[in-house]
Length: 494
Image (cartoon, rainbow, N blue to C red; front, side, top):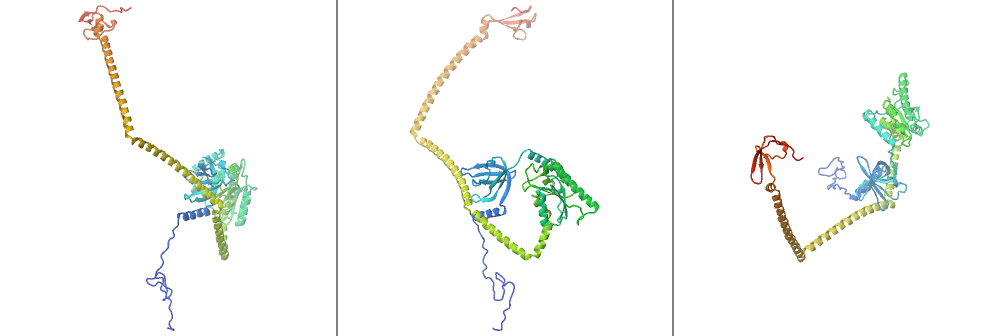
């Protein structure tokens, strides 16, 4: 036994649940069954709520207010909708910085809030923390009109959009030399791609005539690109410029109106170089954004998109050389995520948050209770009416007496109506008999009148001027008739 050596065996032993490591390891004789995890509705809803609040968080949403309801508790509930969808919103009374007068039925708003889940109904909703009006004035109407026109002409077509070069070396920039947008772009370029060459075409970006100036700057950059290509002054990719960036900072609709002019839209459309539009903030959209080959939310975002290729390549090299630092950053990021998750869980358990949720649930229960009370009252009234009718029907003596009285009254009325009707008929018959005797032709003839007719045709003659001389006449008297011939006619009434 002392001289035996244990031989290691790899692979599966027949009939065993897991691979054996040695000949003495028989594996799992009775492997455990897979255990499934069953969640309650509350647990699943909490997980969905956590995912929404983590992945979506604070957002800006625009739409039209409908189903506005202000509760006695001070909370405001409404639905934000557009042509294709709707979103439930709640504005708690504790949000003191929100102008509640802006929330009106049918009003178009831009709303800031946090996407969350109301567990009691299993619905997602937006907890509103900010409200702004969405402009719909003359400028907005002109914007929509020009937008529809250019869209119909194909200036917004997706198939004409050109991709940006991944590693640009020289770009054109059309903006104000004194604006904050230029400083933002230069700051991002220095940080991400310091070797990038920028050719500036200065122009005004606000005020009367700014639109044509920006369009002229775009044409100037295209001309510069063409001249560089002809003269041989090119970058490594063989072209003078590789794209054009049109940008300015944020502002009101009036401030950004230069980028909504048709002359600028057509200049971007006819540009030989790809055009990036970065005007205003994330929620600002202009005509130049729709025509351009790429739209960036802000000037800084545009610079990041342009330098993304070089920056990501440099970052890849740095990550390849510094794998240990990357692992440390991942660990730190994971710990930061855990800290953020703990912070969000703490925020969900905050007393004010729980109180607001309970108050919203109380409002729903109050509304449901009022509906139930009204329905119960209607049912009670109907039951009392049915009982009263049944009670009246279960007293035969009273019912029989009522029916006997009705019968006697009906028989008396029938007898009186029959006598009255018979009397009226007799009087009517007598009157008609007298009238018939008076109006009969015998009575008229008896008073000395006669009826003259044409002897041949029998037609009654009523006018003397229609009788011809020599015409045979037949005259009827009270007793018998006389045949005669007319000698002359004339009007004897005058």
